[in-house]
Image (cartoon, rainbow, N blue to C red; front, side, top):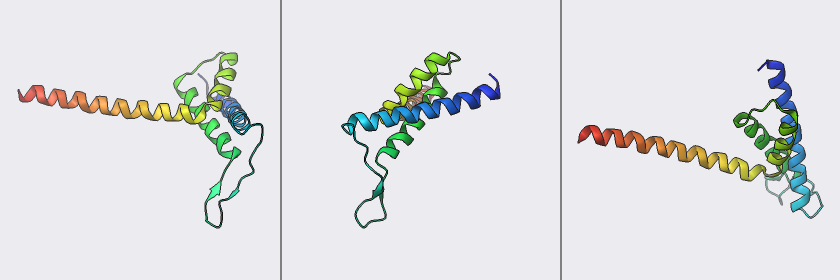
Length: 117
């Protein structure tokens, strides 16, 4: 793959993931977008629909990393779907990463125990 394809795919994927995140905000917000703002008098901010957009972008880019496809039609649909399911997809990747680390630890422990026997 060329650098041009990688940069273009990243830009397209993140943009379509943002669109998927916006769709998520609309669907689960009952066709209303909440405006970002401060939470009470604290220093915290409620990102509202912008949070969904950012999570959608991140999820779409994460999916691009795992499923690299040169087919533009699949890239478009996968990016929008990943953006829509953003939080769930990132949580799934996180869980899979934790499980693989635990699996590696268990395998290493099994090797140590076999050597000790």
